[in-house]
Image (cartoon, rainbow, N blue to C red; front, side, top):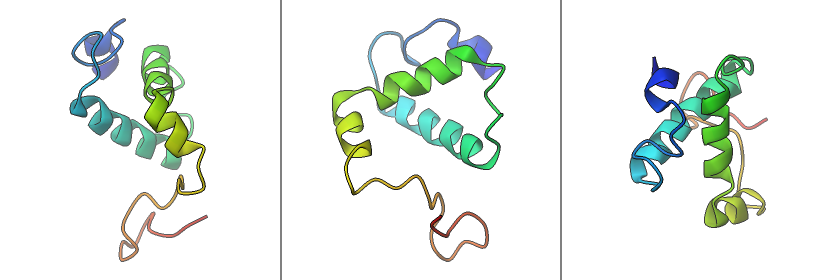
Length: 84
């Protein structure tokens, strides 16, 4: 359903990135952390994630020592709150 909604749009609102795109990215990323195959059937959603990751400030942050893929939850969470 989400894949159908996104279609071939670059971002949720078309060609311009908005805060909602970052919210969607976070949801999709969490799914991938826990189920790495979850987007295999949705090339447009994988491409969307790549577009977000390739935004200059995001790319710079993700390549810095400050970025960590995990944890995705706060330390007090019983699941997903610990570093790799």
